[in-house]
Image 1 (cartoon, helix red, strand yellow):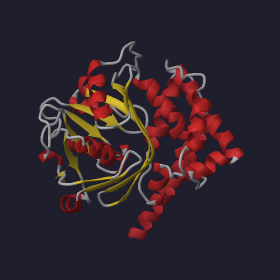
Image 2: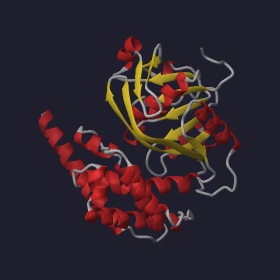
Image 3: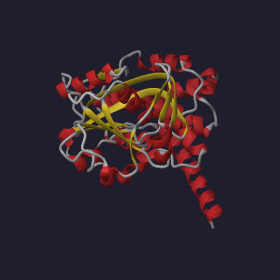
Image 4: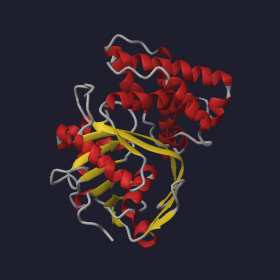
Length: 323
């Protein structure tokens, strides 16, 4: 039974991340509206299946849409698309945000909120990072393997570090927590984004270049040392941009990776499936931000160049095959 006094949520990008968090909210009685693409008919007929460390469940019926313009206006729109799809935002956001609702951008990378703010206005945007091991394993079927924390804050285009947590962010976090989601509102969005990049850049990037799982990377002494060197560059860039990471951030990140269940990174899954990788948001944007502060990241730049090569090779192969 839906409680009309609760916030309503739209989920744009109902894959692994959107399926898990949106499903948890709907299961808890929130009014949730999901934008699906290829899975829309399947979920209408069979519902949404979630296997999770927080408890398995089947959600049916589900508010399913295959066109964003027919979605109802909602209080919060969770943007869970890959950043490679952000060119679609002008057609995806106006419907669910039409009456002034907020957008919670749960995407990887740096400066990913910019396009959203240009569409809905900067005062309506929150950005966050998900520390999550979750995969879509079939139509309308997601499998949550490990972790699951969301850390988010109000978006500030000036990259400032507010002293206090935004009250609306705190309230949205309370709704997510009420649904059983490990969500935390913080003051400094940019500190959080750089902290996530300390994992995303080495482990997403190296998993593709070296064709390895995160477990294989962390258990090999040479690649673990390389990952640490990349993390040190990211931490230095973060500090240069005004967001000093905790002294133990690198050690904690490496330790969490050692404890993580065997997991294929999202970038490796995209590469193996022939999909575009999120190279601009995860690697190029941090490189540009660091360069603007006079900071070089040679290991990150080399990794970016290697990934660009692999992406271009894959694109050329696909183009030749299509001829």
